[in-house]
Length: 342
Image 1 (cartoon, one colour):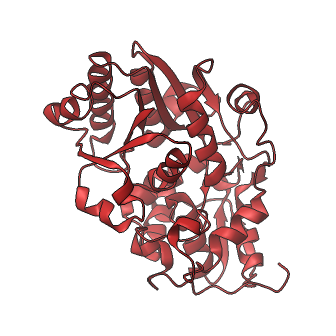
Image 2 (spheres, one colour):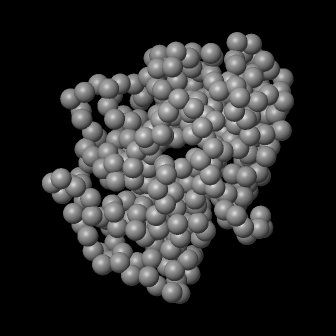
């Protein structure tokens, strides 16, 4: 099957493409900056297409003009700018129109878990995800939306924000509005869901995907500290404005400020999968042995085995092509040490 991955140079895309190649698919890597793809080990094994989701001609040239294309995976997420929701909606509308004008049979989108609250109370970040999902689901072909909460893995922005703040604050302080439940998922399991959605013709509609373990967000942060032998006191502060928290988070982390703001806004509600239909409908032959939170954290924080080819390394760990802020500014070397047997 010929599969176009839109957002190939992003975190999930960089881990998904090797899995699709392993499944025997012919992959087309779509990105605004094709030179960025040179950093990934798989770059010479895929077709590349310049694709800017904000430009009509660019989207049409990548999708409608490729008669062999059978599936599209959409991994584009806006995180900043005053009008990012409208930009996201317009991009999704553009892709849907191009898909409808093509021979594409399957459209897959990785979204975020939508809390069970009134729509008008959603954060801007999650409201945008839902709007994009609704736009893409109107496509004439089979649509599968996959909703995930925190994706665990080195270079995942939500994971990196959590670990950087955990290690750079002398005392762990949590606003009371951040004390909510979350169901993280390891990137290897998220990728398994996407690659199954591409080929499972009976699957359609929207699925919540989770790692199977529910934990309070402050406890998740404490796990990071325990695994790296950097335990410190944690306090809940009843009154702490969100604007102040995001400002401190932006200042302390290496992640762009608009992204920090968007991610923190989403911590105001529980982010837990409603059911586990995805396991039976997308992965009927198994894969129930999802990575645990502890295992995912250990593998994500581990120093990469640079003696091995990137092709053979753990996709949960740091990989060539990941942004510099994903390694605490130390290139391919993690500076964190583990407790023995932790």
